[in-house]
Length: 297
Ligand SMILES: Nc1ncnc2c1ncn2[C@@H]1O[C@H](COP(=O)(O)OP(=O)(O)OP(=O)(O)O)[C@@H](O)[C@H]1O
Ligand SMILES: [Mg+2]
Image (cartoon, helix red, strand yellow):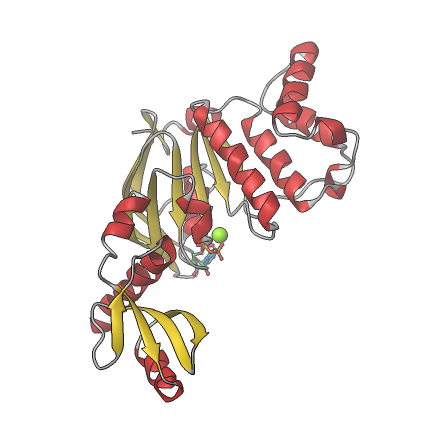
């Protein structure tokens, strides 16, 4: 395991209980943290980077205790925050050079070499003279990854890095992360986009309302959703009833009526047949289930 989290709680000063008894084992490789807005992803990531103090619990990072060995933990971690901004005064290569200096790379020549090779590997060498805040959204994200990697950390934490990117840039960014993971860097990727997880992560956790609703592989999450997805052929007058009763994933016109996919343990009273789940179905299934548990107590 690269990171072990035990009994982690975070209560913000205003009383918000943002993390509730989180227990997670994060293996090496790419780990996906999926969850809707407000689930607690950023809170967890900021705790992992030692920027935010937990209220209780412990975190072990490659044998170091997050609270007791802050300095060592910071040295093996890289971080790309959710709202990363660049100072207007820096060109792309200058910014990376600045990040390298901050991380303690004092030798000028070595630093230049490291910066150039990093710019090359994230595909920004040709735009190195451009001001960082003038880069496109996708380029900014890649520069963000570059600054997180410049001191050769063992783990990088990237918080919602694909938000606002077009599909092509999103794929490019995902491929970049996969390359980084192949080089042996553990990546913790938080996202609310299901598609970010499926293609790249071997292990994942689904968070909701400060709790872990699922932990395992994406395949396992799919498996546990088998038999819970239904395709319904409906008349127009039935559509409203179904919409009110079940979480509907998709609705497409079919003949004189509708064909819809719903996620439910059981569907009674409609023309329904089982449908193979995808990760989006699984996401909805686990979120709904947790919601039900929550309303019952
Ligand atoms: N500084 C703070 N003080 C008080 N409450 C906070 C603070 N930061 C976050 N919260 C609350 O903690 C909960 C978790 O927030 P967090 O930002 O960790 O969620 P998130 O999963 O990252 O959401 P998003 O997808 O919107 O980024 C939310 O209810 C949020 O309002
Ligand atoms: Mg967040």
